[in-house]
Length: 272
Image 1 (tube, rainbow, N blue to C red):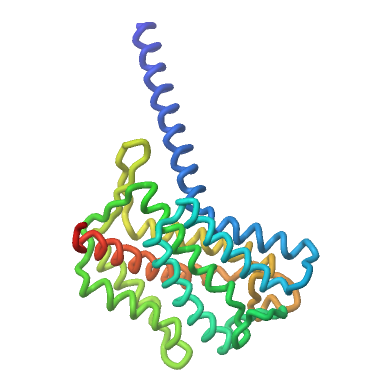
Image 2 (cartoon, rainbow, N blue to C red):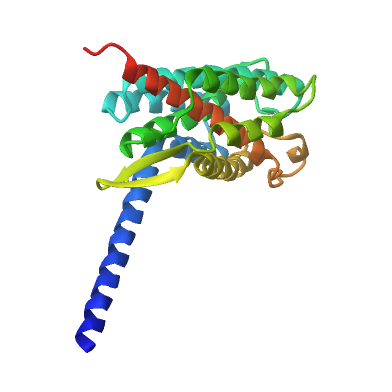
C-alpha cells in the first residue's frame, strides 16, 4: 500500500512539475511576443521621468518606436510580412486617433514637432504593437484556427466593428449588437496553440476577452505615464473607466480578424 501511495505521489509531483514547466514556457513565449509593447511602456515611463534634450517627448517616442521597429526586422525577431501587417495597423490606428482627438474623446496635451492635427505620429505604434504581439504570438505558439467562418462573413464584420468607432458619434452605438454577432459567428471557433510540442485549445471568444482585458490594464499604465489623456484625467489621473474594456475588446477582435485573414490569404497564395 505504501508503495502505491509513493508511486501515486511521484506521478502527481511529475504532473505538477510538467504543468509548471509548460506554464513558464508559455509565459516566456508571451513575454517575447510582447517585446514591442514592453519597449513602448518603458519608453513612456522613462521619457516621463527623465529630462529630454533637443526634442519634445512625443518626438523622442516616435524615434524610439522607429528604431525598435527597424531593429526587430534587422535582428530577425520580426519578418518582412509581419512588418507589412504592423504598418497597416499603424495607418488604421492613426486614422482612428485623428478622428477621436478631433471629436474630443481624448487628447495629447504635450508639444511635439511630429504632431498632425493634434495627434503625435508615435500613437500609431501603440496600435501597431497590438498587431506585433498577435503576429509574434501566432508564430511562436504555432497557432491554428478551428472552425473559422467564411471570408465573406469575417471581412464585413471586422469592417462594421471598425466603422462603429466612427459612426457612434453621429448615430447609435451598436457595439453590443456587434458583440452579439461576434458570439454567434465565432461561437464554435477556437484556436490551437503549441507549447513544447503539446497542443492546447482555447475558445476564440475567451482569447478575445483575455487580450481585451489585459490591453485595458495596459491602457491604465499608458495614461498614467501620459501616453494620452482622457477628459476626466485633465486635472489628475484616474483609473480608466471599466467600460473601455468593451472598446478594446472590439478593437482586439478587429485586429485578430485582420491578422487571421491575412495569414489565410498568405497560406493560400502561390507557392514558390
